[in-house]
Amino acid sequence: MHKRSLTERAGKVNIYYNSTSWYNSDMNTDRNVQKVALIFFFIIGLTHIVAHLMITNGYFMEISYAIKNILEIPFILSAAIYGFMSMKISFTTSEKDHKIGNILIILLVIILFLALIYLNLFIPDRI
Image (cartoon, rainbow, N blue to C red; front, side):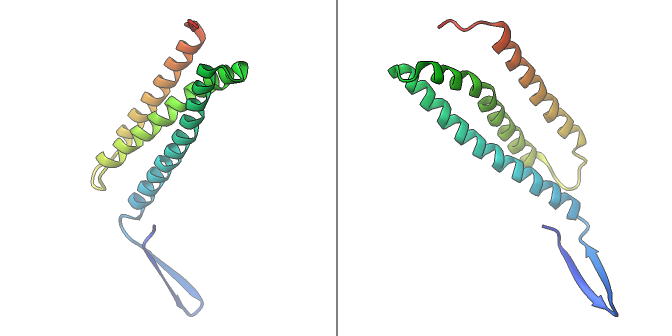
């Protein structure tokens, strides 16, 4: 949250920002991304587990295989985004510039995504 006080004098509004308001805003964004990734992880993970159980028991085989194959990459990516955001939140301080850390995290997620696409497209399943 931004720490600001609004004072009205003669129809004018003066806004005073705290010196670390940009840092607090970035941290709130990071925490919100982390929370959304955790929610996606739970929902996609539960659906993925149910699809595996349905395959094991022989229920709705075609649909279960489709769900399992479709949700594989989003499940791993939501876990990776949650993990990387947790690392970023724990390593970030207001005194240091963290642009290099942001770039590194984005590059790692992109590399992971491309590796997963490669594994899914070019290495066949042995089922």
